[in-house]
Image 1: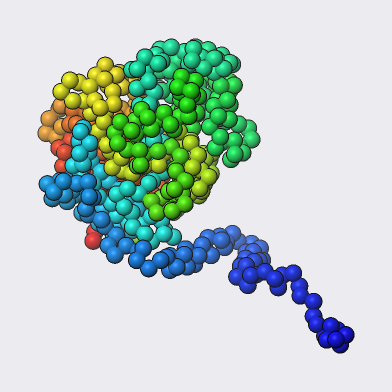
Image 2: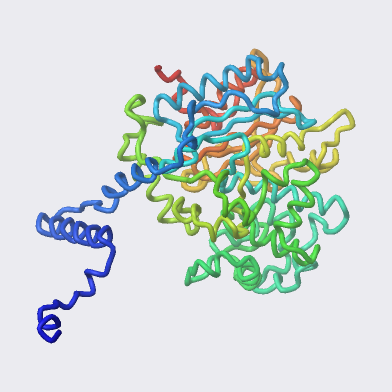
Length: 488
């Protein structure tokens, strides 16, 4: 036995590791050494990611892959809507764009003021590593496109007499009055004039950013960079934290719960419009679209928006690096999906977002499902100097020419072949998801996408088909730079 022990070789710790991990570490080390020797930058993890995604896709359960990546029928559509010219044009546009490689996954919906869908279609996959098809009820993170339902939540509380637009926020939330913010009104916050656009903690810990109460306390104590009410500056994250703190004091409830009660529930959208994805959806992971930045245009389109593929890639990279909490990789994380970040992580389907905006379209009395006639008129009044600068629009959304009303952007449409102006309201999000309402036409329109573009141009190509069928000319900020058809 002593002889046997003597011949036994002690195992090295590394031999207890899984062989796949050992292989990964060794290959990574070789690539690092090669890059160092050649004095070049090699995205070795990106190279491995290509094979990793392929492996994940190949391991998908049989039957999960889409037989056809274009889903032409939403069960919510009436027979006449399913056969309409509008539905046909949307389906045709999605099919062309998907074949050209411009779409990963996308939903498009148009709804009437009573919630009826006039058109609804979706195409593509939930993610580049998830071959399951996008469904009508799939949930997309729409970033700032979710600011409009947040604003509507506050406007409904105003109509119910629980707060006033011209009253200081500190009247309801005394702590917010610190550091010279005592005269900042609810109206100032909704119009992005609170002076807190750049207010972020010096140490950005993810745990704090995902704690709604923590961020509410932070903005309450923050010092404004300009006197509230005097200057417009887009509050890309603080917009939601201020509204959440205000609503908490007024309703003694979490903002996501109040939004559900004031907006989602009255429209029957609880399961398809939410702040904070429920645990059930996180566990099943059957409805969640996975976000990714578009690195470059497809080969079929060459350059897009007057930029080379390198320029587009650089812009997309800059967006994710310079804006806290706006990296697609972060927003695919379960902990961020489950959190409530009001200005940035609303999850919804396109048909839910379209029905929300349709809920702002007035009926015969002048009131809409969500708001009264007087509030709808106030919603469409622009504040002073509320147009996004070119630098802000390129970073945060894709509508540089729009102005702000009460928490939503204002657009001027025109009837074709006439000078009749049609006001509209809406909001876009980082990467292209967008929703809007044209009140006089009584319609809500929405597009959701999981392939994010700095320009948001691909969704605008689909919007152009919708606007043309509705007989309206959109404002410059909603027009695609290259509206020509994509070759088959």
